[in-house]
Image (cartoon, rainbow, N blue to C red; front, top):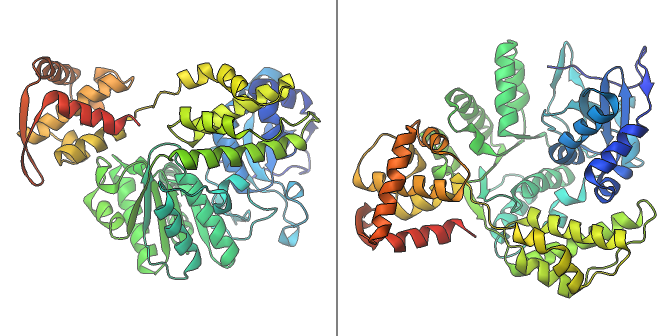
Amino acid sequence: MQGMVTDGSPGTTTLDTTALTEALSRQIGTEKFKIWFQSCARFTLADGYLRVGVANPFLATWLEGHFLRDIKAAAQATLGSVPEISFTVDVELGGSRRPASGVGGVPVRAGASLSAARPAAALPGRPGLGRSGESEVPGGVAPRLTLDTFVVGSSNELAYNAARAVIREQQSPFNPLFVHGGYGVGKTHLLQGICHGVAQVRPQTQWLYLSAEDFANQFVLALKSKKLEVFRRRIRQTDLLAIDDVHFLASKPSTQEEFLHTFNTISLAGKQVILVSDAHPKMIGQLSEKLVNRFVSGMVVKIDAPDLQTRCEICRQFGRRMARAAHGGLGQKPAGEIPETVIRFVAERVRTNVRELEGALLKLIAYAGLQGEPLSLATAEAVLAEHIGRCDPIVHVTDIEAAVGAYFGVTPAQLHSARKGRTVSLARHFSMYLTRKHTTMSSSEVGRYMGNKNHATVLVACKKIEELLGHDAELNWEGPHGNKVARTKAILAHLEDSIVR
């Protein structure tokens, strides 16, 4: 693993980054650059390293997740090569608060976890492996990632109240707290909001936030470098462990075993575990029964796609934030407050998730600002026509498996197995058919996903469903509550209604 890089070290040569930032502005557009980089980030190029200094780790996580590819492209265009990129906490960008003992910005390599609010010094002799951090936030936290800016509605109220209880109570009644839902519904926002809230209420709390992919990568690295005990000590000696995208652990038995022991150690010590996933624990294929039992032993809560009222409030909040950013940006005249008719139009047309909503609003506000035109319903209809036309709901294979499993009373693990009972086979055929119809996965890819089946098996399954649909055959199977009978077209309509939101 790359060690720490500190600007201003003896022997470093700092180069001008003006051309790079100009290229990045062209790459992502002036509006996005103004909002996310103009006054929020500082680029430093020295000795082959490109450092992106930001005010806090949460902002670094956001920029890394959304703009790393653009930064690399800008670097390639201006430098002729892509240097090592590190995201650092730069206290000068965070305002008046200063770190103790004169510690400056501590870089985090692109792709590594940003686990703590205060940058932690590396362990002696172990570059790149840091302590779990203290929970004091230098320079504040990106407003998008706090519970103060989490828009609460009927689709997420239960999850929000559970998050507040975790922050409020020293010993949370919800342990573990498992939050699941589709893409872009606010799961990560809620998870990072909990971390920030705990840091505010109980500053002494040791907390660690990372994705399941980071956990797996760091575990493998610790094994290869013979530093497994250091890894375990860092992960397990925390008061709060927050893991995002825990479904990434599926099909990784060794990593699952390590995470099981980590979970047990933290839970038995009375410490808090919070997990986020795209699917319910029982709907995550190839996840060990031991982990599933641990996950469902606490509070399992789902976040649904936001309803119309919630989408409207999300639009209002995003519009206000954009207006504030534009007012302090490049001197352009801000577009002004978004009219309620425009908010209603966008919220009614874009129904999938928050990211689609914000993408539509960003395009609309950027257009109005650059053209110097006031926002109006006519402008919104013209500018967003193509965007809305392309915003058909995106269906993921996990959504299909969840819908099929719930309807037929089987689990994803059974769908992936070699079992050939009537119910499992029927559910597997519908799952393969829907995956081929609603995703871009090939027959071979579907077969590999469904338990390393041959592509011919997928073709046979799809042909079978098409034949049943041709004469709307009556099907029967054994469900959780007894024998079930339904027509093929009615089954398909129900399943498609469940997965296409």
